[in-house]
Structures are given as structure tokens and as C-alpha cells.
Amino acid sequence: MNLSRKWLNEFVTITASDRDFAEAMTLSGSKVEGTEDLGAEISNIVVGQIVSMERHPDSDHMWICQINIGEAEPVQIVTGAWNVHVGDMVPVAKHKSTLPGGITIEKGKLRGVPSNGMLCSMGELNLTEHDMPGKEADGILILDEEYADKIGMDIRDALMLRDTVV
Image (cartoon, rainbow, N blue to C red; front, side):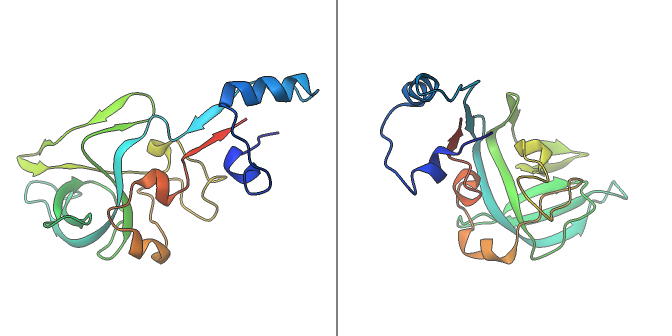
């Protein structure tokens, strides 16, 4: 059984560290096999909204997207994703962001066009259909309209990934 500390804190206040909590649970007769800090490997990824899209001049499947990430100017990202449209709310890995598995995203050029990050799928954020019911496992993670007021918010806060599972 997986137990969310954030969920548990809705009922009781637990101030113990993750390690102390796991030890106390084991001593009480509930064996703890491990803990997982959700979102620990994710950094510099925010909620963004696709403002515009245009075809890449040197590709028949790539798009040049302008993304509102809550800063003064939209950020340009080149993507080959097939499931994104203008107005979609998406996770945006900005320059110098990290993904689970130690993957670092940096700005660069795709077929000669500058790209300042990457749009993320569920798999790239280490999420599954269990974590995001009703969302497509393939392609970029399209967030619901409820995220429109969260543009620029850290994706860990927006998707409630700042939690430890025991």
C-alpha cells in the first residue's frame, strides 16, 4: 500500500522526517519497504500555454511554438509533437531544467531554429495513467483548462508532486 504524507497530514499533523516516520511505522507493526519523494528529480518545469504555432520551414512534422510561461515574453520551443494546439496548457521544461533520470534540458537549435526548452509528456515527468486518469500516455501532456490560472507555476506545485509516498 502506498501512503501519501500530504494526504495523511489532512487528518493528523506529522512533523517527523521521512526517515523517522518510516521507522516509527515499522516499529508499530506496519512494515515500510521504502519511501519515494515525488517530483524530487524535477526542476525548472512550469505550466505554459501555447500562444501560437507555425510549421518548421525545414520539416514536415515539426512546429515552432510560442509559449506563455508567465514571463514578459513568450518562450519559443520547437516540437515534433502531434497532439498540441494553440490554447493548450502544457508542462514546459525551460532552459537548464531537469527531468527524472537525470536528464537535463538546455536551449539549442532544431534544424536551425532556436528552441528554448521542451514540452513534456507524462512519461518524461515519470507519471502514468494512474497518476493522470483520462490523459493520453502518448504525446505531450495536455493539462485541463483549470490550469489556466497557473501559468508559470512550478509543475510540481500544479500537479501536487511535492509529496513523499511511504
